[in-house]
Length: 195
Image (cartoon, rainbow, N blue to C red; front, side, top):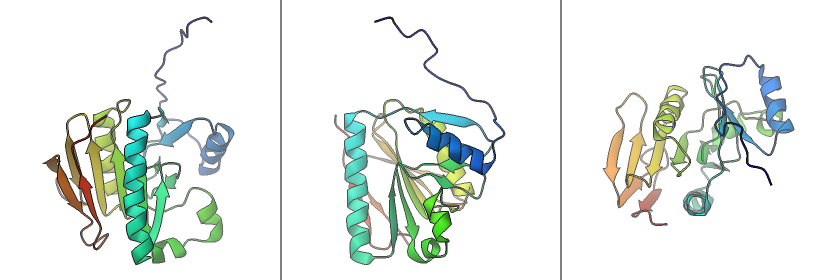
């Protein structure tokens, strides 16, 4: 087999696509994970390795267990794309939307990329992610109406907490993260990340 000589990182500048065109682009290229930031720049997301995938599964399981007990909202995986009010189309690693906000969407809106900012998001920085790009993404979430966000960073053994209108809070691991008033009673114990 020959070696791949194409650039491995694609840099899509602003592409003027309607929401329907972007939706079709994603559907027609389902083997790729494509996001679009608020400026219209297309971002092809790299797949994650086993350790990162396992951390994501553990985290979504903890949130989903809490949500099944409280029945306060809907939990979404990293395969879910949200059309944010700020203009971006983003797929958080873990997302949660308060139930009455989800129910206010029409069935058609729920089927495509829901036009809503989640109330809560988690991003896990994998070895293939650029930390600065994820921090910008977290700021985009806050600007779009997300009420609480956590960025878990195994490389630096840190957790970053994002709240609208506030500076991010950085904690060293291990730490306990609280869902505050957004996810009342939800606590996530984040230990040191190990491979």
